[in-house]
Image 1 (tube, rainbow, N blue to C red):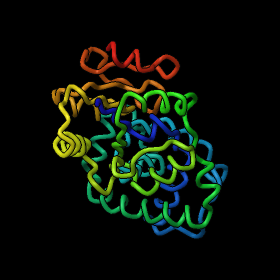
Image 2 (image 1 turned 90 degrees about the vertical axis):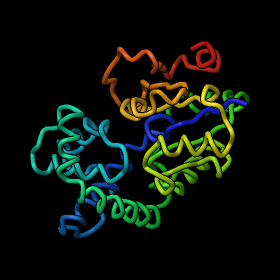
Image 3 (image 1 turned 45 degrees about the vertical axis):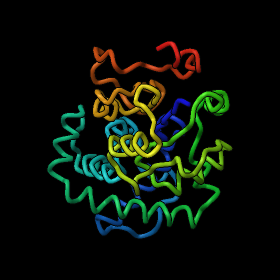
Image 4 (image 1 turned 45 degrees about the horizontal axis):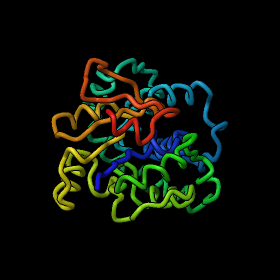
Length: 248
């Protein structure tokens, strides 16, 4: 049996609004200016929201949202992945601390406003149909930097069934290569029978050379950094199906 590995945010679920609200509240706490929980997107300045949406594509583990908020609040323009990486290197300690605070804030958010929290998420059009179709041909895994509990709860909310043991989130590792090597070794899967879909091009570049088939989700948050890489196949949400995956 072949295995299909899905990234989560930006591939299955659009969670950008929840991540904005959660990370914004966490950042206010981190800066010591937290008064009360910011509940709605409209309570965040419009320019701030737009800049967060524009630069979300650079973030991988949740701690890296710190860089977006630091840049926006300091009027620093992030105009490339290289610039983002420079800020990431110079703020490495803060990013590590912020990640823990981010997940604590998310848990608080879910606890206070459970229904609203779920409603901030949206499945991409047609994903449920593709999920049901592809599940007949592949064993499914989730490989994500999101926390396992949130992934599991959101999949249940959208009726996208998967074996919980096949969900690998931030608790296991924030390095997707580590997760995929674990899946290959513990399940005795050969690399050529493993397919991975992600919307972060850098993640796919990191995995290049492992012998697995790599697909870039063009509908997600990411951008293509090197369209000359023939080992990374571009997937379009409207047209991708089992035939497309098998033929590429």
